[in-house]
Every structure is written in structure tokens, then in C-alpha cells.
Image (cartoon, rainbow, N blue to C red; front, side):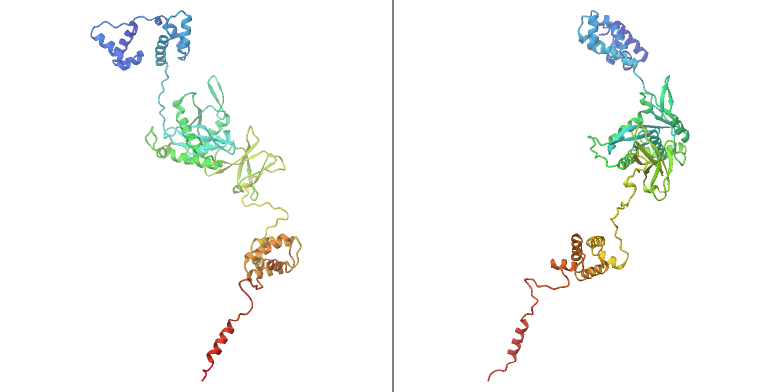
Length: 504
């Protein structure tokens, strides 16, 4: 039952809107209640007045409490405070009255969001997400989102420093084919150093970066999903598809390159399917928006990457702060940028490729005289240890001897170390033995001769003879004999008998 004041508000709302549901939303009641009150008035019936309740005398107090708590006060706490004021009703009545007052308060204090309608070529938003863990370090996912065509790009970063972020943004510009007018992000330290009277103070590096590409770097309003909700949704999708979790059962990544490959695959997949808001493919819409983007410089912004160093033409090592650090061998003769990662003891080296700046090496800070070397930067390299000679055949005789097998190479090293005389003659004799028999037998004998230090003349033949492998001799086994057989005599006897004349 409604009070007189509530019934008058319902009827006035209906007369204003001429709609049951609209009047119900304005008055915080059901549209059935509005219809019943309007029909009763049209029939000339007296209004059904609700009887007075004990809680009605305390509605003003409840409304004040709801307004002070921004609609968060609990029903049990409100009932306790009402009892202290002399209220004798039940807690059920208090909760029902408080729920009605909260509903009316929210209706008048709900924030209404207007859709953000963008133009092509204007807005690019970016945000960060926690990526997978590789080699004990968490990878950072840089996610960008073009507001008009909904084209999304995911780049894997080693950290969130200004140099890494700006290098990632340069790669994003080259992927989408240009730069927009505005670049929107959160109020992070790489963009905003602080706020004065609500006005964000820009980081000088961000201003220089924006001037280089001809864009304006802006920061969004806090808790404003209308302006930055799109890129935040893209971050959620990227984390769900790239980061290994219990829900997607993805395996752990073995290297940073695997994470980069996963990000590229996600970018291709997400932009090739129809977007639910535009009902179009983002990759196709990007082709239209690309005509509204402005061109970017051929060389990326390198002011934040560090100091420039040139890699020598024959040694992939650079010098930074009197210390040496290795770079990939593919950068011989090229320029790189090296910097110290603030807050750590790491040295970061960057280079340029077709997609923009990319990190190529990361070392722990070292000391002068102790170079920091990564073995993967020297493919095919073998440390030269005195006494560990590399065998390289130069003559036909050497090729023939080493072709016997690994035992021949071992025999040559050990025989040379022992100062064996007439090595060439002994090598030629081994080649002759291998020609008479098999390489495996002679190779086995040479290996045993090297292990036991037998390099004298005839030692190789002795080893072969001891194992029954001497190819220059013939031996008899239990099933064969070297003696001449008597089968020939048997044939002679038969011939003599056949020639005898018959007896008369």
C-alpha cells in the first residue's frame, strides 16, 4: 500500500510520461502499481491508502544515512541505530524500507555512460598486462588498440621502462602502417610525472617521443571505461590466450622468442575474425583507416635507447663504461644502442631491424678487464686450448690415414705427443693393412695402440695378431684345415679301375 504522497507522485509521473514503465522507474515502484493507481483514478474510486507504519516516522533519518554512506549502509547497522533512537519495529521492516530508499537513491545517482564515438585515424590506446614467466623473469605484454577499426596488436617486452615502451610503440606504428593523432594511456611514470590541481604533468621523454612522431600523448580519466575500456578488454583477451593458466592448459615457454611468436599469432588471429561491435573484420577496416594515419620517420626514435656504439667488423664486442659486452654476430659492422637499466645491474643492447628497434642482448654489469660474453653470440666457435689440436688433413696420405676412423686420429695425436719416429711410414703401413682387411679392424687396433702407448714398428701387427685380426696371415679354425685333402686320390683309384681290361 502506498501513502498519499507516494500515490500523488505516481500519478504525476504518469501524467508527465504517459507510460506505466517510465513512471515506475521515476517513482521506484512496479509498473503494475502505476497501472492500478491510474485505473482507480479513471474509475473515480478512492485511492487505496496504505496504513501508517512505525518506520514512516524514521524515513527521513534513513534517507540521510543512505546519502551519507553513498548507498552502502547495511540493514543490520541501520536497525541498531534506529533502536537507539527509540524505534520498536522489527529488523525485517527496517531492511525493506532501507532497500526502497537505496533503490531510489541509486536511480538518482547512477552514472550514465555515453558511447565514445571515434573518427578514423585519431586514437590509439595502449595498456600493459602481465605475461608468462621465462627464465625466472615475467614478460610484459604491450597491448595497443585502434579505437575506430578495433585493430589490436600485442608486443612482448622485457620490462616497462621508457626505452622498452617507446621501442614497442614504434614497432606498433610500423605494424599498423602509420601513427594516429592522439596516443592515449594510463597515468604511468613513463608518461606522467605527477598531478598539480588535477592537471597531469607530462614526462619530458614522452613529450619528445610524441613530437618526433607527430602525435599528442594523452592520459585517460581515472575510472572512465568509455575512453579506455576497449584496450583493457584487449589486455584480458591477450592474457587469456597467451599466458599459460589452468584454464587454457598452455605449456610454459622455453624462450622469449617463443613468447614473441605467440603474440604475433594472437594478433593475426584476433584481427581476422568479425568484431561483435562493428560486425566487420578489423584487418579490413585497418586498410580504410590507414589512409587517415600519417607517415612516421624511416628511422625510429632512439633518444631513449642509450648511447650509440659501433660493432667491429670482426669481433662482436662493444665497449660501454670501460667494460666489454658481446652482441650477436649478425650485427658485425652495424650500430647499436646500449644503456644501463635503471634500478638493476643489467646492461641492455638494442639494434634496428625492418620492424623498428629491438632488444638484442642483456648482460649483467661487469668490471673492466672481465668481458661479458654470451656463447650464443659466437656460433661455431670453439675455445682454443693449448695441446688440443684440431686435425686437418692436407695431403693425400694424411687423408687416406684419417679416413680409417676415429682411432687413427687418436693414434696420430698420441704418437706425435710421444715423439714417435717414422710416423709417416707407420701411417702408410696402417693404410695398407686397412686395404687388405677392413677399416673397422685397423681402426680398433690403432685406438688400442694409442691408449696403451704402443707406437713401435710392428706393434700394430702384433695387436691385430693377438685378436686374430691379422689380415696378412691365414689361419685354420676347428672347422677348416690348411692340409691338402685326399679327395683327389679317390678319383685316381676310380680311374685306374675303369681302365682295367676284363679277365678272359
